[in-house]
Image (cartoon, rainbow, N blue to C red; front, side, top):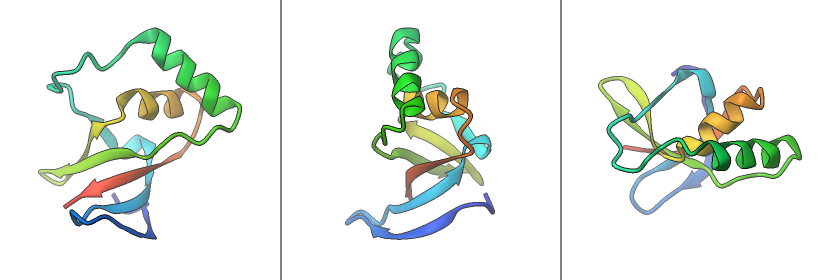
Length: 92
């Protein structure tokens, strides 16, 4: 959790836009949405490989961990594409 860098962005709900280390994020497995559609995942990876910037994911702090709440496909596709960091809204 040490390797994130605050940007000049803050949402009305108090969320902060940060650049996070991908490897320090944990998936939210109990998300009611089917979180891994292989076709969608590979499409996002292709977009990332061609330098398309996808919207930031949403991350929550839970028991000291950064948990991906929304954006599992974008997070995992960035990981598969070899990215080290990802933009995320971190909720308080």
